[in-house]
Every structure is written in structure tokens, then in C-alpha cells.
Image (cartoon, rainbow, N blue to C red; front, side, top):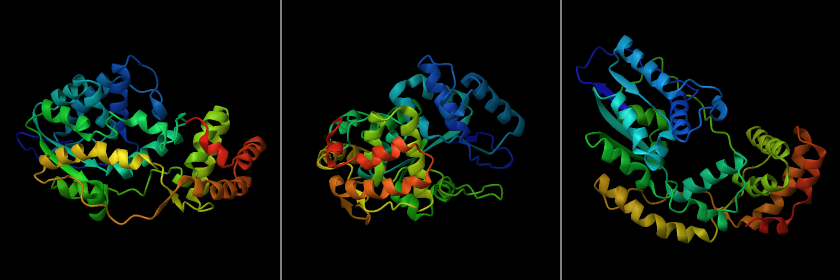
Amino acid sequence: MKARMAHEPEYRQLQLFDREPHNALALKMLAEFKGNSGPVSYYGELPSSEEMLENIGHQLHSHRPHTVVLCAEAFANFGDISDTLIERLRDTFSDFDITLYCTLRRVDHYLPSWYAQCINFGRRLAPLRGGGFDSFVDTIHIDYCRLLNPWLRLIPDANLILRDYDEVLEAGGSIPDFLASIQLESHSMVVVPCMLNSGIPHRFIEICRVANWELDAKDSARLRQGIVSLANEAVVDAKPRPDLLGKNRDKLAVLFDPVDRSLGQLIGRERFFSPATAQPPLYEEGKVFTSAVEELAEALVSVRVTDRTRRYVSSLDLASMGRYN
């Protein structure tokens, strides 16, 4: 969100932090709304959201900035949970002109990526190619309008900037695209970080999915961490990439078609998303699974996992893929 003071005070500085402080704020607001006042995810103990918003208010009063940026993926959940969450942010910046900046990814690219993150978090899910797909139907993970419309309804005067993730990448990445979109000049204090979202290559997702069910929490976590480490060091190959959606790909296209058209109307075109850019070929998951097991079983020798976990990975076969569907 970009906000500009109505009286246009002197421009000071923009600073981008690498620890996602506003995501901590968003997650704390969500946790409090659900009645949980304890630690939040990997942020641990946090002040109350009221204290955090009050601190932002003190900063605004002290520095009187030209532009304020609040950036958090978790804000996307607010409209689906409660109008109150959006209203609290809106009212904090009642003296500002508000811009809503939202980058959306083609759902057939986004949903497998989010599913892989859920597996990396340790969740026990059915395969996305099977019953696991149903858990995402009728959620903001497919219905982007459900994500966006509450913000537009509660802040009707906001300037909306809606961006296609593929176009963002073509523009040089999220930070350069954001600065260009809101017409804010880059500052010497702005350091564009390297890629921070390390994850499990999709080739190994089915192994981790089954392991989340069959190993204890500590062993499955070490296995996931080991795979991420091996992938980051290029010890294991991320290709070939499996098609995690499988037969549900056509179902997803039907569900997403009206969403794509509704988003397009917001920016004055028939559809929001451009035709698919060239992507690496995807393969049936079963054809990728066996080679992934063989490669990983060998590579795990150099990773801090138990012998029991190594034996477990070596024991997996195509029959393992049919479990927990």
C-alpha cells in the first residue's frame, strides 16, 4: 500500500527491510482476530498489533514522510477473514491518499507453488493432482476477486495498481516494478535483495508429502530442510518438473475463467492475464517420482538426517504415491 500525505511534506527516505516487518504486523493482526495472542510463526514473540500500529503513527508524526509503504503478502488474507482488519489499516492512514498495489500470478503457476510451500510447512495434504485440490476450491488461492474486492469496497477512493507476475518479472523484478508503478524514484538506501524464497523443488514434493504423513515431525522437517539445502547447493537437480495438478488442471481452468474475466474488467481488458509465457515442459508425476527417489536417497548421505530417514526414502516406490489421497 502506498500512502501520500494530503499536504505533501518534504520527501525524506525510503527504506526496504529484509525481515518483512509488515508481514509480522499482518500475521499478528490475523492471530489476534482469531483469539491467539501468543508467538507468531517464525517471528516469535511480537508486540500487540495495537502497539505496532501506534509505533507506525509515531514514525509518521516524527518523520512526516512523503510516501509510506506497507508491504505484506499476509494482507491478502484480510478481506477473506474480516472487514475489520482492512478498516484498521485504512483508519490508521485516514489523512493519506491510498494506493493499493497487488501482484497476481497465473493460477496454474501459483497454485502448485503455494501447494509446495504448504508441504514445506509440514502440512499433511492429499496430492494436488487428487483430493488435495479440493481444499483450495472456493478460497482466495483460486478466487482472486475474493481477495481483492473487500479492499476496493472498503477503500473505494484508492488508486488500484494490479500487476501480472509475468509482467513484473519482465520489468526486472518486484522491487523495480513496484517503484516504477508508483512513480517513486529509487533511493541509495534501497538495496534489492537476492532471491529469498528457497523451497523444495517440485520434483521432490511427492516424497515430502508422503513423509509428512509417515515420519515423525522432527524427521520430516529435517528431510525437507535437507532437500532445500541440497537444491540450493545444486547437489540435486530440480528438473524434470512434474505436473502437480495432473487431471485437475482442466478443472482449475474452468474455475478460474470467470475470475480472470472479472479482474480484466478492473483494468479495462477482456482478461487480466496475458497468454502463458513459455514454460519448461511438465511431466506426469509418476514418471518423475522414481528418479527423484533414487537421486535423493544417494544425496542424503551428505545431509544431517537419520539413517532411518535415509532408509525410508530408499524404500519409496510408485505404490507410495497412492497413499493418503
